[in-house]
Length: 121
Image (cartoon, rainbow, N blue to C red; front, side, top):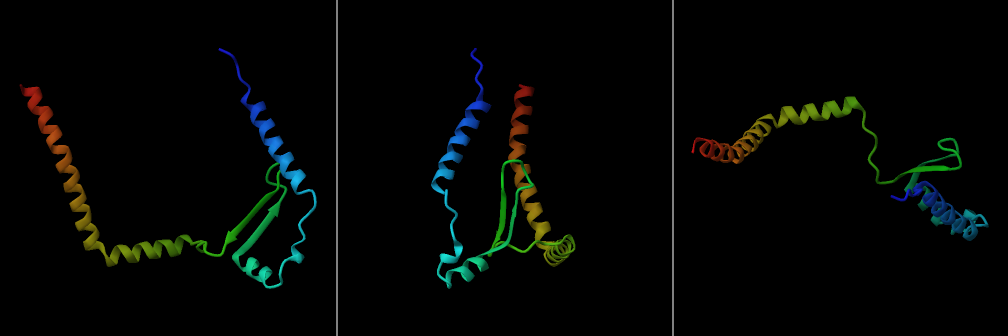
């Protein structure tokens, strides 16, 4: 079998894509040329912007939160929420668990019975 060097192939593909991007964006984009009404709109949509060159060599990390992202939840608030749901709807959850477990038992029972019948015959 012929050995293929996919690392070299993917590296050359990535470098050619990067060179194309670098040639198209040789001049930096001046954000101040945007309409003054658009800039506050964008800054409210994209929050918690992080830009750092220290995550991986030869790459810039750019991260942000979108305005519809949920707020991070603490473990205490999650436990309080799950406990309140469990105590409020415990009887419904038990009924649902019984229905689902009975359904699984009904699915598995004929297969077990037919296997026992085949073993007896």
